[in-house]
Image 1 (tube, helix red, strand yellow):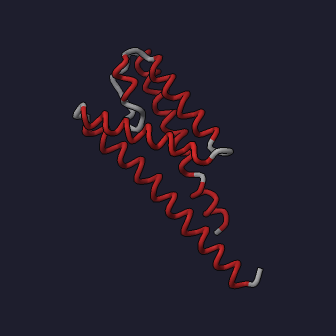
Image 2: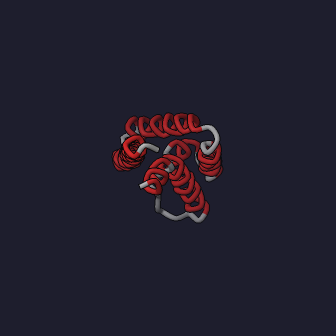
Image 3: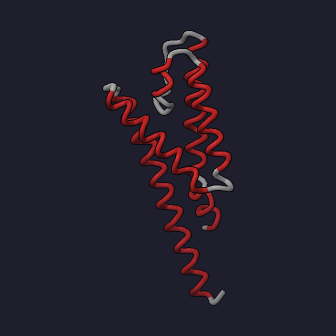
Length: 131
């Protein structure tokens, strides 16, 4: 159960890395002139044109994920940026992007809640055993 709690606790960091990966892949796809987009990646870089904004956005999210091992609160910045990107998607009527962004945020939220529940169960188990 400790392993599960640790994995669930690390989910927001992994989701942040995945957003970085999908955003970078969208940049690569633009360079390759492919007509494919990963909806879990950031939408905002498309507003600036070219691949560079995608790589910058990916670098920002990868940095946030990396720093979150030491500064857990920094994930709130990533969440805020992703929520703002979701609102931009809605403003631009990119509804498939909105849906995917909401799914990503919901899955991260479910993982956080599950991690906290497991941690509470572990704590109560430890208290009950006298440790």
